Amino acid sequence: MEKMLGYFLMMAAAVVFVANGQEVITVTNGETDGRWGPLESCPPGSRANSYQSSHEANAPVVDDSALNTLILFCDDADATNITSTQGYTGSFQNVQTCPFGAYMKSFQLRVSPAGNTTDNTAVNNIRFKCSNDREINGIGNTGGYWGDYSTECVDGICGLETRVRPDGGVVVDNTALNDVRFTCCTPAHFQVKRHY
Ligand SMILES: *[C@@H]1O[C@H](CO)[C@@H](O)[C@H](O)[C@H]1NC(C)=O
Ligand SMILES: *[C@@H]1O[C@H](CO)[C@@H](O)[C@H](O)[C@H]1NC(C)=O
Image (cartoon, rainbow, N blue to C red; front, side, top):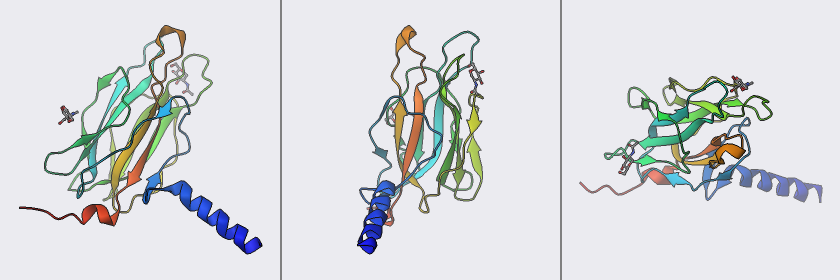
């Protein structure tokens, strides 16, 4: 009986980390407002090597939302971009790219935790670790604190889902991006027949 329970718990734990046979990497300091958006993935044979984010700047006495939209670029010939639910404001920062042909394998979020009596902003910044252990990091907002790095996708990041609180106008404390999670590429994702 005990053995069966142990087996059952092991299976339950496995389900948490694997959706549709794909490993999902997460961090623990995301916020919880808004709904998870659709999963978008790189075309077969490619993985994410760059990102771009939009940010609403910190202004005194204004309801800011910090990080709004996250876009990943895949390393296919078209440099396909993928995004999940987008934010609604902010300016796009420069594209950040893993150097020397490397790809993105893990991430970290800078989050201003809920309960700020001045202005809640949720996710303020994001950075990624590349397969050659370089970090890529743009200019983000500086509220809150960096959390721990996620675990690593051995074969790179292939998809993303964002959790965004929709624009609530002037009656709510807007936070835009609250959390993000990524799916890892599977070996099967790279076993595509290429036509030249
Ligand atoms: C993403 O791809 C779409 C479709 O090709 C294109 O219209 C859009 O400009 C791209 N966005 C960025 C940020 O490159
Ligand atoms: C609380 O909000 C203020 C105003 O936006 C910001 O300057 C500060 O960094 C926030 N505190 C934390 C812990 O994120």
